[in-house]
Length: 93
Ligand code: HEM
Image (cartoon, rainbow, N blue to C red):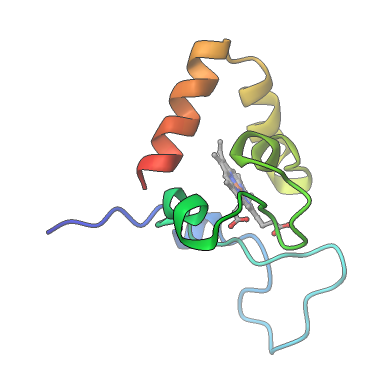
């Protein structure tokens, strides 16, 4: 069985090789995305990001900034159908 991870070291933008608690207030651990499609059914909510400020997956993507700003800008240019396909992909993980 193959389980796609979608949370590789390339995506870990923060706190690598640092001792615990050495990330500054602008740095967040990049979470693995596997299983994210199960959050709705298992956790009975769809709040994302470390403080739950995103009400759904698309909001979580559009909140990306800093090193991930290019991803936000890329997604902003997608058509509604392409955005739906991206969310469907995330929900399949
Ligand atoms: C289109 C590309 C991307 C997608 C679809 C995506 C998707 C997501 C999603 C759905 C979350 C919420 C996870 C959760 O709350 O459990 C998330 C969080 C996060 N992503 Fe991405 N991401 C993308 C690109 C990136 C890139 C390029 C970076 C780093 C350079 C990045 C860094 C992070 C970080 C640090 C968090 C946690 C932020 C927080 O908790 O406040 N992401 N991402």
